[in-house]
Image (cartoon, helix red, strand yellow):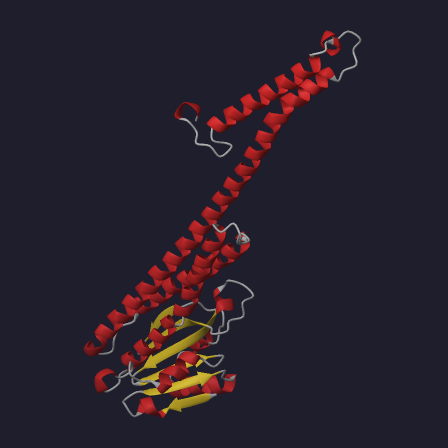
Length: 313
């Protein structure tokens, strides 16, 4: 479907928005607007990452918009985002995409960024407004990722909650890593874009600063995810050490007692202590003293809830 948005045309720019075009429609549009066949072919490639090209008097860029309801079958750019191709030639801006893009519909309803302060709209103003919408589409997923990481971190240190699955954190890390990569590629595209007028130069600078902000935001969330993975491994190791410590304490108590019981449980003919009237009580007293000594030793080392003394650490 090809439609010309007249509201923008009235302000000096013709915006042609193309959704899911057929081959015939696209070829006709390319001939009418003088678009190069190679870049037109790239505009239909759903796997293309952000890129920038300038061919004669035509500026061509590809950006990727985070989908409102992406098909989360993976953490690749193609799973999470949708491509939008943008052509700028003279006073005409052409956007091509396979599915309906909410960013285009929002921009059509609100041209505040396309022609600020009531000024006559230029192609640069429209490109900046559209690129801003693309960048802002990553705001919500980054916020959601940060909120999820905070929730998982709270669960990690709450013994009443189930520990967060490492695979969940790793998947979230992959998502944020992909967003960071797309933001970096988008920044490279925007760095190459040149404003059509000096008046729109500050708008491009503001756009580049916005891209830097989202890169920094994504790197911050990615670092939090990496730290959470490290903390989860450390907590798991600490809990394993606690289990090993408990097993060690039980072993230290029962191994010597089991040894004593085993010695006196042997059926030798000559064991003088067995015939003494005080033998049974002496062995019990010895076992009790040994257990008390082990308990004191572990207590002084802080293994039984006490505070370890400096000389016993």
